[in-house]
Image (cartoon, rainbow, N blue to C red; front, side, top):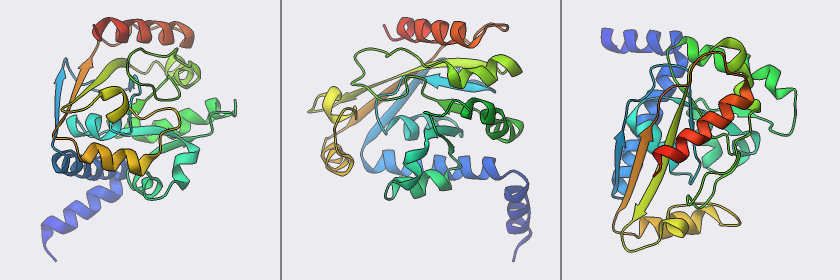
Length: 224
């Protein structure tokens, strides 16, 4: 057993979220390569805090993490999904029960260890995905801990183009679409192109509702 393996193992135990985020990045890059997906981004990936993005597809997570290792927040139901649930657990995903108000008090305890390791936490404040033609209103509850703790919050916008298809139905995953048929159809397209634009971090001192409004406004601005 080499010294490099021992050092890597100790580092993974000391910084478990870093190790999971880097594993997720490797998997994401492999998945995107296998489906011929290309990712380009504009702006600067945030150095710390929360990255808040519009939500278009299950592709959003591999696209974002392919740019930089990070940890995501997801609704608790995803934990029990076939295959996807296992993958999200391996990725260190933070699960929340969105219907319970007490979750807001638990969020700082869940986010804290991730942020302490220098990782960015990704959230989708719309609460659901859409066809990407607009940005749904943001739910501000998940931003309350950031407002209280003074964490940096940065907006991001994601869009897709599908060669030989329509991004609103072939890349976007929303409504009553079914995962595996959608994924197989997407793999059959010649190429998927994802664009990510990062905005400017919010000024300090905002409450959660002001954060939600400014984030959505900025995402709408950078999307045009």
